[in-house]
Length: 568
Image 1 (tube, rainbow, N blue to C red):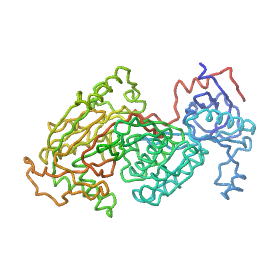
Image 2 (spheres, helix red, strand yellow):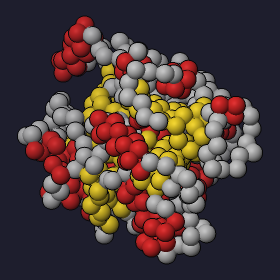
Image 3 (cartoon, rainbow, N blue to C red):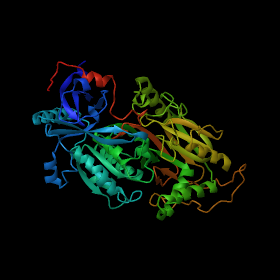
Image 4 (cartoon, helix red, strand yellow):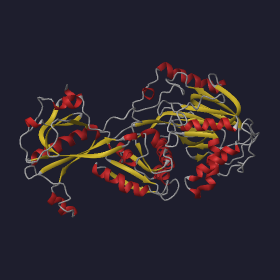
């Protein structure tokens, strides 16, 4: 098999044991030589008699470097030779391969394996051939634009980047232009007007979901402006962004990072950037009549989640704890709101919000390409909407919460999220309607977000997978576009009612929580743009593989004798 053909193989020394090392187009593999077949290699070896084989995917090699001997290391760093890696007098030359090793809970780490040789030219040859294979991986970034929010979360963004991320980028020979933001929307405005995007292979944000939202709006707006697309037109076909976005989590919740990687770990996210992973993602555009408001990639929440955010804005001095306090206050208030929701169902789309099929790496739902018949059907429904909403569904009622989840919205507090089966890149959003109910019933619904029970299995909850939707509140809005936060919400606690009754507080408007920002209007129109952006991610891996040193058929095949180049 050509894919398994050897590019290079040698007998080297690793951890004082002689090993056979082989490189193919896809795998770097090494196997300890049987004790009976070993020759003296200058080391005292009391290891086990059984041989072990290991392999690393070439695509998950971070870098390969020549290893300095003790004298060189001491001259450059001042480290004591006793603490430096010792080289055998018989094998004074070495090279080190840095690679990805998987840990529990989807975390990745950068590990090293060092091979020794008596031949310096052989080490140089290994470094050259491995680097040649890495250069073939064109998805890997070489130059990045990095934005750091120093105020995100616990104000550790700059330290996280400098201590955990920058060293990894340096090891992988990635250059980075770093901008530490000085105000709200600094990154958005810089991307809109000043940034020379042609210089970079990607954009990295160090911060929370708010920082990512800035990057999203700046990048998408820049692409549309440069190509003459009017974002105020609801039916405008937005152009996808060529640059990928990397998220280094340093915020309070980091929902988007958690839903696309599976963990909020800066090192893991940095390694996804280094290997050039690419995960497409849908983006929702939100309009009020013919005025563009914002983009959303995670949660649009009206009612409960909008009230929580509105109240928490007045308690920013409390830090992340403000969300807990505002959540309790909003729950006790137990408001509901009247309105009309109309939506275009994704009837021809694969999957259902309650099918228990979670979006994972390589998700076949997100990879599904609509047929020409599907496209014609969708266009006919959108055209019919303008003439009489044929194909649209309309629901009027009193709601405690209206949520649109374009991803699972999973986070450490809610491991499965608001909609566990929502997909990242299928061109839909899951519309969740929580009707007026008792406080106790609503509590049961909220609790199910933290466990494995079906949060949709209530008579007062319904969920629909949609491509577009509109919402019209029952009463007239009085919120201005210039000051979206100062809305006429009542902020005091309501009288506590019994669990079996509800309070009649449906006379006012709530606000929309759009990825952590308050929208200035309650009447909105939402459209899903399929795979508008791409992240440096691969989705949550379905199952954790053993650490990246695998003993399998691929390893053994790489170590089998071959006709290709072999050096002893």
